Length: 135
Image (cartoon, rainbow, N blue to C red):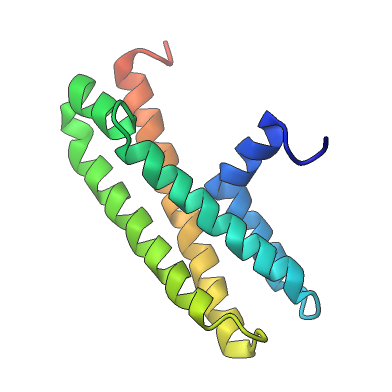
């Protein structure tokens, strides 16, 4: 069944994909259903990344054990993800008929999502280099 396999789930959990889809949906002034769906997907992606970071044996635990010098970066990433998720929750309260102000706020959130995704990617790269995963 389309839309349920591992590739679909991985793309749905991707911060990069969520940001791209949200930006694309924001360019369509008519299709608010697509905008709402992509908004929800962004929230799901953020929740997934926060859970993956904080889970027992998750990214934070692995880095704390093997590369503790990156722990401050992990904590900053966690704070950024949490703040961004809070921003999405606050914007969700305003998500009735999407007005220009709401679109501007969602555009800002999409840009923040891109920045957090870049930070996460850089942290993962740094951790892999020092853990020997990219030899």
